[in-house]
Image (cartoon, rainbow, N blue to C red; front, side, top):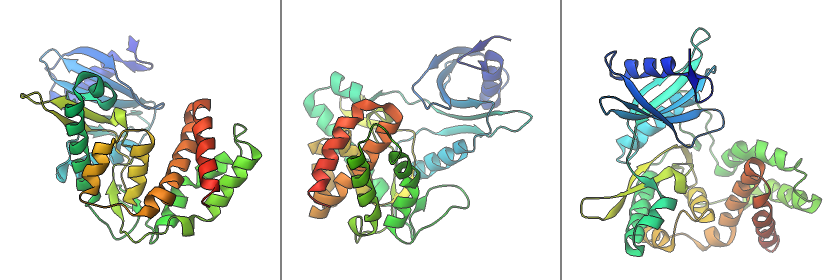
Length: 311
């Protein structure tokens, strides 16, 4: 049996297609897309022209796909352009292949869109992204929690939930040799004060959880106007909406046009700009230093220097 893309056989992929649109369908083409380190992400096309995105984990019982499918369906229900879920299957010991099959959205991510459209068109797409982000953030909940289908741990207070989400990251930061002893002490000091530093008056709001350029797809309409056509790979939570905005600003996914459009509806307080944003961004920089290496050491050090004057 021939294999491709690691341990995934053509026969396995053909079986997934048959479960999707019927046994008469023939698999024509498979191409790799960017994806996670555990799962493999593929674009699959049939001879009949049907196309879908497949996230698949061979030899794993991966229940994370159920959560992603649930989150996509929730976002779709409130009018967010996300891929339609076709099939989600969690592997068993007898058939240890887990996968999520979704709609293929034609478009390019924001880092490619900015190279293809005019400055005015990109500003229009940014304003549309702000509109969609506001629509997500308008969904509220009684508690801070991850968005999952079924039982989930809920928190009354945002700092407690934030600490819960990042506790393992903080512990890892204390062991990072790429961080100086002084940097580790500073991070520990901030972590101990989260109850005070992240205090706010807002309510738990739905966030996408991983809004950066590669997860935002854009395309022109038949008039040539650029719009956001898809948000992919959600990690949804009911959280403090400012944490999502800080993430968008940190990696320059959001431009000044986005922030103007967002704040025309929801004005951000000075505490966001002066205190909470750099703290949210610090934790994301620690995470990226751990995942992707030394290129994030310098911006992390700069963020700690900024926070030293505040905290």
